[in-house]
Length: 299
Image 1 (cartoon, rainbow, N blue to C red):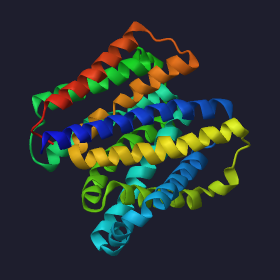
Image 2 (image 1 turned 180 degrees about the vertical axis):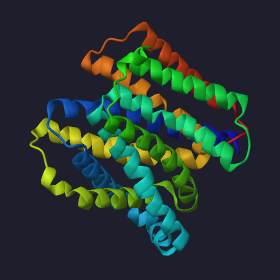
Image 3 (image 1 turned 30 degrees about the vertical axis):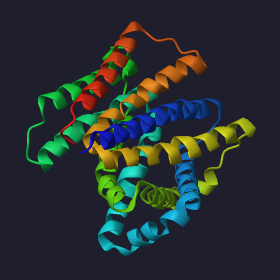
Image 4 (image 1 turned 90 degrees about the horizontal axis):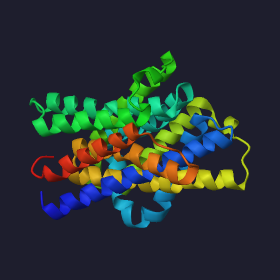
């Protein structure tokens, strides 16, 4: 792979992870100040973000969009991505927070790094490289330190929190794995637009989300708009584009920048104070990204 393409893919993944982190803080603000059901906001953000992408890019992506739906293999993979990738990794994370807390949900979701490493090792019948193992260890350790302050006793898990957290980790493995081939063949925007609409619609009808609409003021709806446009439409498109260029393993590891960004934004916006142990976690996560960048040859 040309270095320029690799640099570009890493940049897309970093931007996607950073916008996810910002979106996490904004979502936390929404849940803190308003009574909002996780199913409602998940369905709304997916459908609305998909429609926005479709309206903006359909004239240029028309052929790819139609072609994807007329190719049986692509359509099958798109349906799998919509339900077991996009929908699961969004809904399960918010639901895990509902039944536990954001720190626990983040730690559980970050198990996707470990799952991805072992999945690729089994898929390609090889042992993970020493650099990959170190990256995985640093990523998990870093997020653990950030989320728990180094004290595992603070993670009090309910059965629902544990279940949804593990489902979220699996969804975060399925998302980059299922989206890479589709994005290479049809482009990141058509794949994301279609996947968002399909996954959001399935959830909407599955839980009858139209009956869960909360009472929001102007600030509340502006927050929802940010979650849809920046935290969903932009972030997922950037990340899928990055996956297309760098592959699922590197993109999964770069995605651990999300909790770092969320923590920094929380400190600057909400005045959250951080313990030195948490700062050590930031260093671990940033070191993980460095290891990805210097490992040029492999995907």
